[in-house]
Length: 123
Image 1 (cartoon, one colour):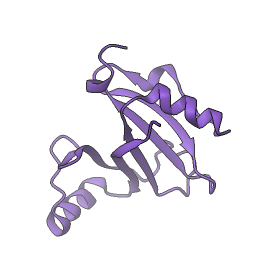
Image 2 (cartoon, rainbow, N blue to C red; image 1 turned 30 degrees about the horizontal axis):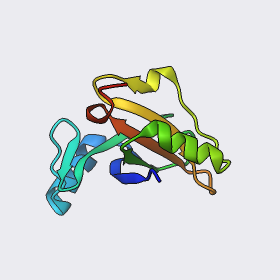
Image 3 (spheres, rainbow, N blue to C red; image 1 turned 135 degrees about the horizontal axis):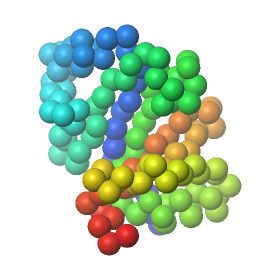
Image 4 (cartoon, helix red, strand yellow; image 1 turned 30 degrees about the vertical axis):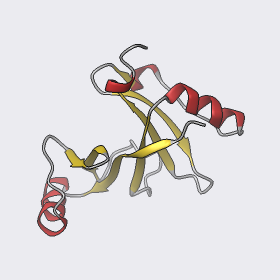
């Protein structure tokens, strides 16, 4: 069974993303280099977004989780088989970054699924 392998990113709104990013670095040790925080389990993007972004679907949505996956195609098939709507868009396939899909949890919260480019070189 395909499963998520870790957190691929945590995205949230902020009126001052730079200031908030510095706060996380200072108080929690989340040091960002080009927006990426390195963890033992692999890369996780840690990027405050502007407060007026439409990337999270709903204006009131403050956070969106991104899960890293090994095989996005297998996971998409599994999710669809379970009756979960999976959104994909051609512009979400970025050879230098990877491939993305989006689902929503039962509360309507968006969840991004990310197959990093290093895992899909043969696709």
